[in-house]
Amino acid sequence: MTKTVPTNKARQGRWGWHVLAVLIVGLVLAFAVWGAVEIYGVSIEQPQQQTPKG
View 1: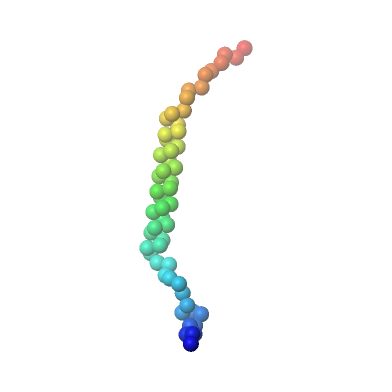
View 2 (view 1 turned 180 degrees about the horizontal axis):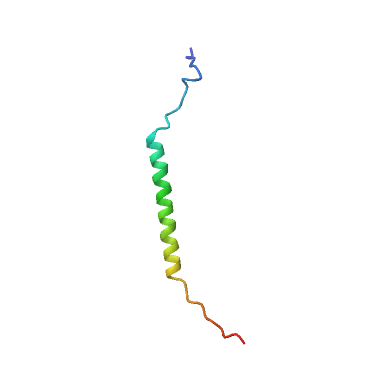
C-alpha cells in the first residue's frame, strides 16, 4: 500500500544557506578567473605597427 503525502510536505530537499553559499562562491571564482584571463590577454597582446599617414 502506498503512503499518501500532502503536497505541502512533499519536498525533495531544502534550499538552504549551503546551496546559496556554493552558488555565490562559484560565481565569485568564475569572475576571478575571467579577470585573470583578461589581464593575461592584455599583457601578451602584440604592439600594433603604426603606419605613416600621407
